[in-house]
Amino acid sequence: MHEKKIIGTKEIISIVDLELYDLDVKIDTGADSNALHCDDIFIDEQNFVHFKLLDEVHASYHGKKMKMPLYKIKKIKSSNGQVEERPSIKINVIFFGRKYKTVVSLTDRSDMKFPMLIGKKFLANKFLVDVSKEYLTKEVK
Image 1 (spheres, rainbow, N blue to C red):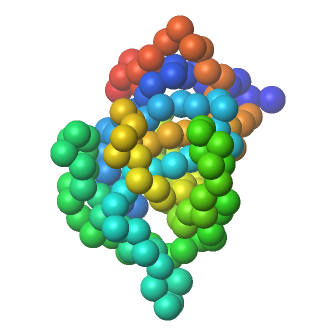
Image 2: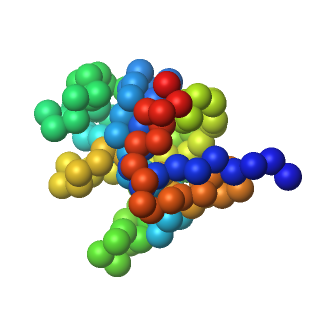
């Protein structure tokens, strides 16, 4: 059994496929899956998801229009109890100096403080969350 990495409730991630680097993320052990903030989300006839990464609050967002293959449409229950269908994509991320492939759902998180949320499926068997800590990724760099 390999040792699990201890992480805090707020961390930094880079999404290689979307050219988003050093993005602030909220670690949410109550959420099943990952979610990423984006705008103008739509799926075309060839099953590609189109979306825009533009947000004045989050400096990492570069305003680019992106196009990625649709992984699947997921039914997600938000923290307020509402169920919504969201497109999800498979992406490569760098987290704590290691590269991972993960699935992220795309949604409007403009009213949230963090542009990305990391959930239990990504964390399972790899990380332990210390709720008294934040930004332990900065110590790794």
